[in-house]
Image (tube, rainbow, N blue to C red):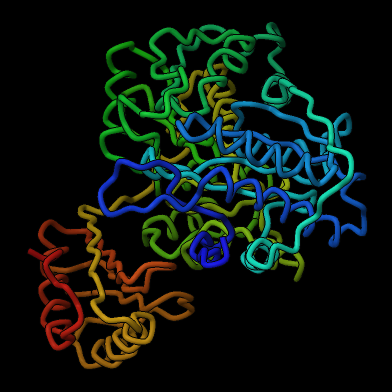
Amino acid sequence: MQKFDWKKLQNGSDIRGVALEGVADETVNLTPAVAQVLGQAFVTWLGKKLGKKPAELTISLGRDSRLSGPSLLAAITEGISLSGSRIYDFGIASTPAMFMSTINPELSCDGAIMLTASHLPFNRNGLKFFIKEGGLNKGDITEILSLAEKNEVSTATEKGTVKHYDFIGVYAQGLVKKVREGVNHPENFDQPLQGLKIIVDAGNGAGGFYAEKVLKPLGADTEGSQFLDPDGTFPNHIPNPENEEAMRSICQAVIDNKADFGIIFDTDVDRGAAVDNFGKELNRNRLIALISAIVLQEHPGSTIVTDSITSDGLTTFIEQELNGVHHRFKRGYKNVINESIRLNNEGQASWLAIETSGHGAMKENYFLDDGAYLVTKLLIELAKCKQQGKKLTDLIANLKEPEESQEFRLKINTEKFKDYGNKVIEKLKEFATTQENWQLVPNNYEGVRISCHSDDENGWLLLRLSLHDPVIPINIEANVSGGVQKIAIKLLDFLKSFDALDLSAFN
């Protein structure tokens, strides 16, 4: 593998690659042989970081339902075993559960690896790495890939042991305990969800356990739950709360089954979203508003850190209705989480970091982006509201939502796309200052955000550069009908002077 491009496997703080053939123009680059070396490289990196010999390390492994999962997991197991480290094989697991294995006092794993590519197509796969301090950062992944590229990996004279372990059951028990103690039902402590019909859509990913191992022990009626069985072909819909087809499916299931609540997870359960009893999705800004209302009841005045594309109405809701602080930061769940941690370290209390994608991390839960934990917090409040004769959505009754919202993604057709994209951003800042009723939003941390104040626009736009791809995403929202089109037309006139931009998204 001397000519192998290891760097191409890096995707921010994760490793991602093509694991299966059969998709046009995609070359398989995450093979079992590559996975074996990555396992050895992680052991080498971890041993150096902790000052331990490989034989002194214990590492847990898990995977989602992808078709390539079993062969890649076997290869990683072999690589780590060749290094001499002890291994716990969890089989199908969730990304949050893998982290929890590093702080579980019974296992106390030095590190953990989750095989997943989140919501990406079935032929992709990847690796997420954890240590006791949390998920690895971008620089850590670069170091691991460098060790793999140089073949500077550990090999022991005696192979490490492998033990199969049902840790997802242990993880689920922790969530059950959380609900029981959080609701503290005066008459039915053990089954505080009795009388509630709650259905789960796991999208054939790894989240099916939530219905059987969390909801049922709590007394919930889960009849109508769908796509709980792991199936790496994802035959029903993409396991992704942001996918329109997936959300339509769970919303319809709630209506058809007359359920009180619906839950949907992504493939590896680090993201989740919900549906109310009317079949209306609790996602993106609505999900952020709902969990913010719960957090600010528990921690008044807390700063809520979100990504850059949240609505103005959400800011008003958090700051004026809930008396919290809304800190709008950059896209990327690690960016949002790290910013919240930074604020806490500087003395500014921040108990929630959450993206519109559904990645939500809470200070009380190790700042782990855990879709199941986030949903569990909602269920506690749902059960409390039922006792009080209220609806969960009463918490966000005063959230003002935009009349229209749309995203445009423009391809940049030049090799130095980051330089080109930054040039567009700077020119747009200049252009905005010349436009009547357009105003640059201060304290903006990503791209350029513009408030559009005219009566026929009444909204905002955000133009930014994609984190990894040669793409400029543009988000536009308006509080009046036709406002998005008005803003888009004015913006399009400006963008026509940039030859390397593909403007077909506006058609």
